[in-house]
Length: 130
Image 1 (cartoon, rainbow, N blue to C red):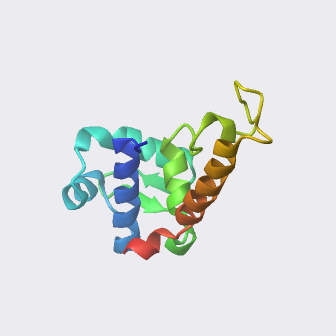
Image 2 (cartoon, rainbow, N blue to C red):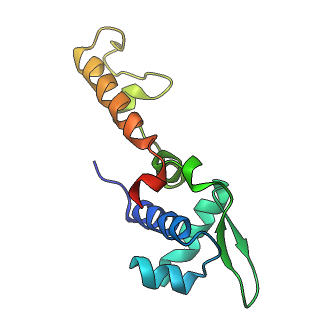
């Protein structure tokens, strides 16, 4: 299991904006966080769609956080980029199981515990990493 590289870039983008505490343009974010500038349109679009950042257009434009950094969790950023944050298909809301055994499968029980631990770690505010 591995997060997409765009997810990593999204986390870096939010970290930079949180550290700066104000407006930052694409070039500044990319230079400071080691992100290819060609990746930024997809990253900023996903973060805007998630309601985490806004874009200010124009020569003095850039991106700004829409929320207090203490209220932005790692999970919020990850979910902006990843299709699902569930460790296994059987942990999705419909509990699909090809064995038709979601209520008594010992592997699923273990995966539920793992999922809970992952979700707890993802609830950490992004400011924890600054």
